[in-house]
Length: 219
Length: 306
Image 1 (cartoon, rainbow over the protein chains, first blue to last red):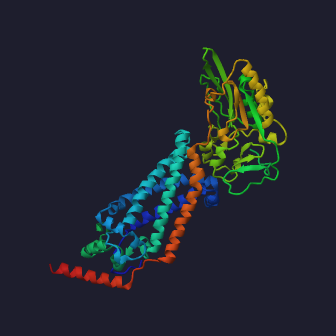
Image 2: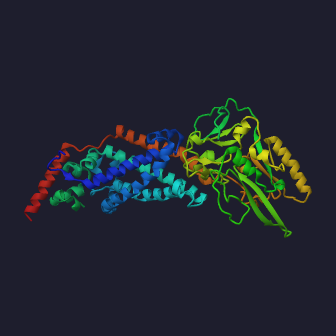
């Protein structure tokens, strides 16, 4: 790929491949899951070859997502730990939302919103997995009592709603903050991008130039 | 079971529009099961298997008169036996023919996500249109009576059809036809309720003071009703629910969350779009790049001259 010499690596190849596997499975899950959530969306099951196919495939996508998310968690949990900077940044959330970035306190590699997305998914994906197993009719239909399954299906849909809302926010943020998509497709950002959006991370990278060539050292 | 008559729907699963109902001016029907007249012969079970061409797998003797031990994809009706010792210390053999109750407000239909996989005809019969069933098992969660069973072979839900194919052409259900004691009756719901009233009076006169009709109002009545000698305690009859209702959990899921969630997701997407056209994208400017270059030079110089 063509990449400016001065660019900073934001996501490694492994980061990106894992992320897009995750994203693909998530989208398949949203489309197939919504098809049996509301009748106006039942047509989405046609994308999977019909209702029976959507019903049969959905849980397997879920198994894939959990495996993929374990990879995401291992790679990203450390950079998503909350710290003191998040308090100041979160207080300036209105300035963030209105693009008044000069009034937003400097933040490290990830801001509080990005961290919130990560931890929300870390909570919701296992919740969806466990409740999903309980209502996986083919294999676990008789494993638990019907009252348990009723609660499981309600929690499953609530968690799915939560995950979809988080995902909408995540996708919109990627569109809104220009060139973040490139960081997840090609892996790099320009120094100006890092300066503008993640100034503390910028200084970490600027003061340790070797970090550019060894991305795992990126804090 | 049958989709022959599709212009008399009053309810259709996963449907936001009015189902075809031009030909819906027909009597509400009901099957009346008088447990006080049942002798447990299982003729109804055999008749059900015969008419519907069902062949459940042959199981093992489990030490009970119940055979097989549970409803199944090929067992749509089942005699259930309970030995009950009454207050006088006498044994009462309470036998109940179990199967779909054909609720006026069917929980299975409410929970079903596949359009048209569960329908209710104007005569009250709740029918599974198996062709449209996706095998998710939501009907199992919606049902207050634990009736639908999912086949491991074709991944479809099955239950008693109240012989909708027979009723459509003016015949009584197969179990009714086969019952040798007249414990199973079939007709209009009004007639059956009236007939049950006479039976209950008779039972009361014979000492069953709690005799009564099981037509639970929590599901707006059922199209399969029981005459019970102990109508005050339906659960004596092998777990017939005392107050069958669609679980509040299912109501929350399919009544409240279903529409709100779709609105919520659409609102979130719209909020994003309007943020985009009002506040707009957050773009890195040339000045940012210049500032970044300046800052990098500064850092570099600092590191060179400690």
